[in-house]
Length: 412
Image (cartoon, rainbow, N blue to C red; front, side, top):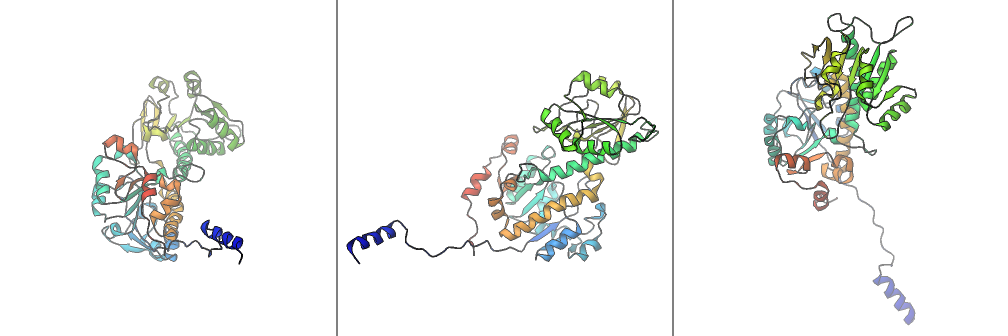
């Protein structure tokens, strides 16, 4: 070999340009998970996080599902339904809270957190307004990884779980209004909608988000005349485009809204505010001018409500009358139809748990999935939500920095 060729070979070696053995990506080893589904003990929470068919899918993929007896009873799923799909039925919740992953709908209460083992993953709603400092500190002490399903994002940067439940709430709000409008005690004794020879009902929807959209779809479907109010031109234009019809839409002007309310049959409050408090856009004076027997369904009541006369009710005593107007102000409307709502939750949870198993654990999934990562408020006992930190003065760390510095399990 000539002197020039030797120099060229040395150059290739120094710059790492010599032929190298092909390095194939090695996937994380799949992990068999134990999943616990306890019976919900929160007030009037009737839903369950996994339906029987979803349990069967998980079991068929090698995972083990422990279910507390009667956990699905309020959603009209029996223990037999779950057992036939491979669930291991437990008669106490003690073993449920010793699993790798705990699936709940409502946030765990303190007594449930006390039952938890160390370094578990828990999926549930956060419901920040109903929590306290003790709740977060106990989860941190357990070294838990806590994920709130209402904050999980998908690839379109929207909230898939909340959207599904909002769709249910929007549709259900019209059925609820129809029930009370037809009542001789609470309503006008009128059917909601319209048909030949009969003047159609008038429905006002305040809010053009997901809840508003599906309330409008349902009201139009039964033949009602619908007017939509929102302060977002984008949302008003979007709802017309999605429904492919020329709806009556308006920005929320007090005079215009009042004119619509004076002859209304049903009003749906569907405003949502990202800062946590819905603006009150219908005053008490406006309520006084509404027709006797008209019906308000305030879906926004969980954020304070958009009617001045609204106050929280529950499924046992859902309505009251004020100035002759019936008010329905139950925060958890989706729990009124728990069978349907449970399928909406389960359709999201089951594939996600399969992904956790495929990736070899929750840490690997969080590293890859930004949308789920943003819903983590405690990671291995470390608070990662700044908003919670500001409220309770608990130190927090940014989840992105934590994931960057976290030592993941060695790939096999």
